[in-house]
Length: 274
Image (cartoon, rainbow, N blue to C red):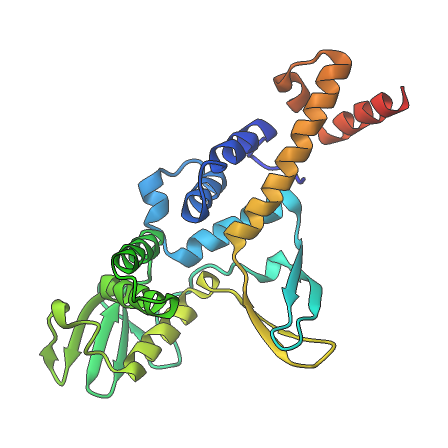
């Protein structure tokens, strides 16, 4: 593990707290480890891609630049293992506006013009994603006829409704309660494209060609889940080291954690040779 401002004791505390959470809760704990000076509401208010960029930076600081990934081919089931360079991932949000015709509004929102529509929206935040997903899940639980695809589509609609700042059709403002159902699919796609361009780290999707059958498989890289898995493995290994050294030398956990990784490993080798 590389040197970082987050020490072993703090990382163990993050890991211990994360055992009681899943998904969003663990992502928040990891983000807090990456930006300890920020409060919970501040962290939840950042664009999703900014959080992902912070987590990629934390991952590089803790475990280095090389990331190992494993994906199963969607066509033949072949297991594909390959390396990724974390430096190539987690780009920070770009200035709003781009070559696709989108442009920043005077309030900093992103504006897209398509046909008779002009729509201004802001980038989704962590809170937006969590709220939309939670609301869609609650609605699905209340209606057993809703399947996974319907639930995902509802979450996307709720997210769009939260992020649209204003919408004008043929020069007339469209009330918020009529959005996003009235937005044509082509407008929705333009909004999605503009958001992806402005915040590329929000959705890192791998497109991997299978060496066996040649077919391409798309897979999302969830940096929060990936980093949590690595932290979980590291924490359990470290606790085993603490157990062995405490048994052999009678040291306390803080004393053992204060040792550098190199000295800790050396003492463990001495225990094994004894």
